[in-house]
Length: 219
Ligand code: HEM
Ligand code: HEM
Image (tube, rainbow, N blue to C red; front, top):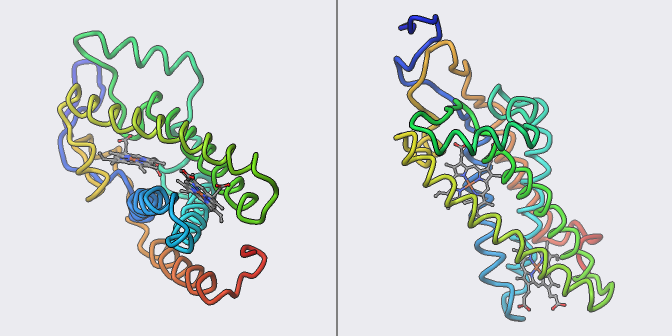
């Protein structure tokens, strides 16, 4: 490994940063959100809306668990930071050498926490609206989705901007798991077993939903 004069390790290889469950979670979350959003206005597609919406919720619950027991960069304790660190990071973007993080940067992490929180509220209000708890709940559901959509827009813009500023392809990293970095910073295992459990769990969940084995969730 290469060190600078100050002894700080610098990028010298291709390192694994995102484990497989985190990547599966991300792209299925995008898929479920897109399906739920596109099917939200028509009666004819309501079953798709509900199934995509609940699967979105199941993915979020998995992520809460994975944020506690997952690999290094998937853990909340690794990336959730206070407002002062978010500001320091944003200020550094204006400098010639912006602060670089191997995992999520503090500003990106803020958007992620917003997406997880509002995502759960979306599912909760969607469930309440589906179970006829009143028209206002449907309005609230729609309002929360609009705020969530705004944060997702900021999230995507942030990903593209920091990819440009740091000259690293963050989208590709969320696909194949790899970034350029110092080898000591790599995670050791891709977490195949957890990935298989996640996929099997999701298939069982979908099967139970579609065959109405989860009557509590359906009106
Ligand atoms: C419905 C749309 C989307 C949602 C709900 C969403 C949500 C999230 C969440 C929750 C994370 C944290 C991942 C984790 O640690 O588990 C994340 C990270 C990420 N997302 Fe998205 N995302 C969306 C769309 C996109 C799109 C379209 C792209 C590609 C342009 C993208 C690229 C990324 C990247 C690159 C990261 C890692 C950021 C980093 O390096 O810190 N996301 N996203
Ligand atoms: C990713 C998750 C979700 C997204 C993005 C989403 C999005 C939306 C949007 C945009 C609307 C308003 C449609 C319109 O213009 O009238 C809506 C309505 C609705 N959603 Fe969802 N939804 C999600 C999850 C859920 C879930 C889990 C359920 C639970 C069964 C649900 C049930 C409903 C119902 C019943 C309505 C009609 C509300 C009314 O008009 O009073 N949604 N959803």
